[in-house]
Length: 504
Image (cartoon, rainbow, N blue to C red; front, side, top):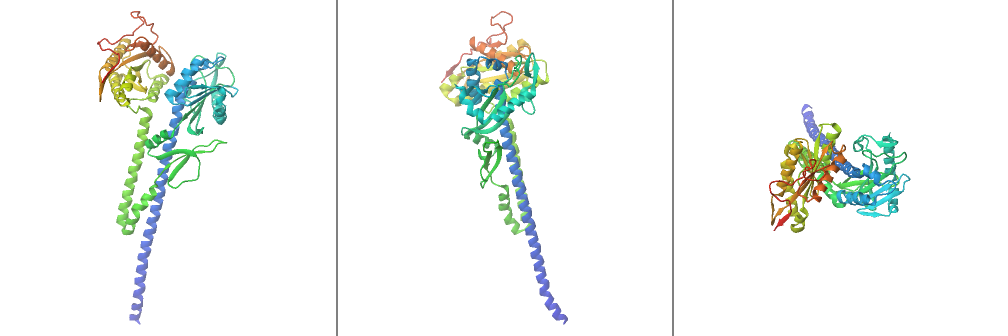
């Protein structure tokens, strides 16, 4: 009986061992499958969160860029006067039609009167019949009303009227009302801001005039943005049913209009995790462990790449792509900090144009022009050195913020050095360029108190330098008579001409 018991028990133990092994293997497989499923979900969520954060940050940056560009007009005494009882048509053409479109890419601009009707409508560089802006105003009336309420909430009385105290571009929440929308089939940024004075003018009681602008973001621009963010096939369209292989997020939702969503192609990290880990999981625990480690390293590099992409985007937001110099946004921040935070008692602003640079582009093409621009930018920045900041603000235009060695003679010597340096031959493939430079100088707070006005003073001095022969320096407020004491305009004394010639 004992032998029979042992004989019948052995198979049961074997089955139990097999069953236990199967149970252990099943538990191992199920637990690891659950871990992989959870890890894949987390990776998908993390990547989706990072990508949505990048898209939102870029949209906010585009809105901020349009607001700052538009505020050049809407936050200005001269605009308030020009759009008064009798509209200054020359101002409208020069400062709104030409400037906003050619310099900032703002396609549509409508000034809305207190009664809600358009005072003027501009499309690109063309001044239209004001009535042409009615559909545009109707479609964005919520932004117009929000801009009006922002003005009423911030205004303060002064000299029988009302003004906005403080720096309107720095209010939190923002002084403007903005959104991303589709206008006439084009996706872009819409911003509404009350037209307000920045210095001496005051507004009457009641609703203000509102400047409503639209800057389109074309497919090419979205493709460039997507490339910089590391997102493939970035597009914006009305919200639709989810599409396999694409991620999306709502970017605009306005009552009475279809919501808009940004979408882009995506390869879920979870699929990569499964593809790389399922084989090693079946083979052995060690292989699975190594596979998971490889996946962790892979996604660590992916997150690092996303972080590096964000850092590059932050750099691009404040630097000029061609020359690597600071751009207008970084320059404005630096000057605003000096003026608003009183970091020092005095500074100088130099506006610089390259003379006859267009001849280089016309004769040798944009590739040669880019070489000349980069070389000139490097020479200007080297001359300024640690005494200030050199920024490129567009085309062949540069602006310099000096915070050291501010004696008038030192600044004039620096200007001479810059002009002489720029005038030196610039070699490029196929030729040699000889260009020049003209400089306008203004001092804060001597020549103006606000950021916009001090830059405008330097810009006006630059125009006087160019009008009086180019290749020279002109200070804001000077009379223009050599030897009169107040005037400090002159050409460099090293004998280098600033006239432009191009050698083949």
